[in-house]
Amino acid sequence: MTRLSAYFLPTEREPPADAEAISHKLMVRAGLIRQVGAGLWSWLPAGWRVHQRVAQIVREEMNAIGAHEMLMPVLNPADPWRRTGRYAIDELFKLKDRRDADMVLALSHEEIVTGHVAQVVRSYRDLPLMLYHIQTKERDEPRPRAGVLRTREFIMKDAYTFDRNPEGLDVAYDKHVTAYDRIFDRCGLEWYRVEGDVGYMGGFGAHEYMAPCPAGENEIALGEGYAANMEIASADAQPVELPPLLDGPEETSTPGLSTVAQVAASFGVPAGALLKAYPVVLEDGELRMVMLRGDHRVNDIKLRLALGADYRPATAEEVSERIGPPGFIGPVGVSVDLPILLDAGVHEGGYVTGANAADAHLRGVEPGRDFAFERVDVRSILDGDTVGGHPIHIEPAIEVGNIFKLGTRYSERLGATYLDEHGQSQLIWMGSYGIGPARIAAAAVEQFADERGISWPRTIAPFDVELVVLGREGSEERQFADDLYEELGGLGLSVLYDDRDAGPGEKFADAELLGCPLRLTVGKRSLASGEIEVQVRRGQVSTTVPVESAAAAIAAAWRELP
Image 1 (cartoon, one colour):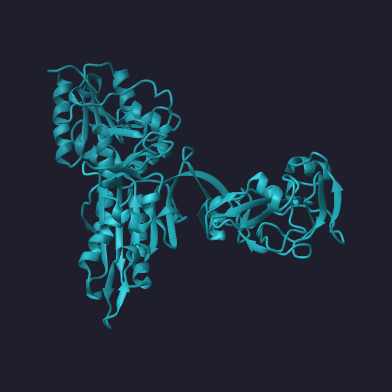
Image 2: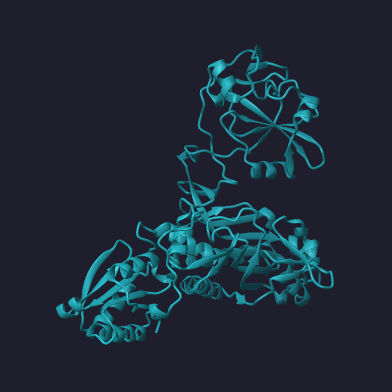
């Protein structure tokens, strides 16, 4: 029997001083988690029950699509990480053992699982394979925050598929889409599947699962039939009113005016009528000039994808030496060996740009007529932009899962091949699929909490029912509550029994803070009336059920909850 009088559930009246996210505040206050250090958290018994219920849903859906569970170590030799190029990741924990061998603490397990498959798979008959584990991960997160949302140690389900060709990978990917959709539905979350960036995972295709909430550190763009992470989202820019087109660029003196706001005010035009320059230097030292509207900003990830390489902003010295005075540069008259990348948000018309001369700008600059360019999509989209004629809006969200088409990146570097039907050696095609149970739990808190505390979805709550007894040991109401607990357990419900010697106010406050889907109250008055109170946590809706057959009525009410 889970009696609260003997259960480790240290509730708090006040949240941690540094807590900003609702989930951080409430999960600490409800006694679910406790901090060990920056980005390091212990899951206390009730919190761990939530985590494990999420993990079990994940396990059941992975098994349903034919994936096989295994377990790989957190501590890895460094060599396979060097071979894939991921040893250089800043967030990777690196250490040495007593023999001075280089080791890492895994933040995912592509290297290890690919090594196992490379040792075993020989023929096309050995494929496809779907493997997964639920294991601790370590990440040297530079800015741990928001409780369990951004940590240095966490548990993740990561799955890996191995196929003969791209078509097989597509089949495996679609199976994981089905499984993930079911997982998040079963966990009771509001969620979106959005197009995502492959990041340091590599590969050529990705989707992310996002749970919208104010504490989310990601942003997603949503519109009719469209959803994408802001890192890669594309949309048609809102139009801007441009001045009349001139026959050619005209230079105007603008002493000391180097910002978009200053120049726009001086010319009496909106910021979007300016073209601002963003010079960047590629890894090989080559210079590029990126041009975009003055009211838009560069999206670093989209720009990196457009360039096909890493880059850095050009220094003031590099700009002065190769283009013109910083604050006054533009695309007209630059050297022919300086490629100009023009963002897709810039439409036809005459714009104001820098003149590549001190204290001067040009007006009436028309792309194509006055400078050559390569068209790219490198801006961050804005609320009110459109996709297919439909406006989009942007909202914060928590990333709770991701799926990647890795292709042959890892199999090529780790020698994972097979012999096809013709005896020819082929690279194995891979996919990678991650889910964070802790993030799912935190997202549920964020989405459904109210001013009183947590309100868990039925399927992942720490307990199905909290039974509150208002009576001392040996009383009639205590005996009834003991019997009711046994009956509910026999019907398959998990029950937290608050048998503490505490007042009703304290018991009710703690129950609302923890947020079990149903709260039952057994007291002398209710027994005398022949009914006991049943309160649905979400919405604080109360009703009563007869003392006779109470357990069956409660179980039926629980099954109807979201």
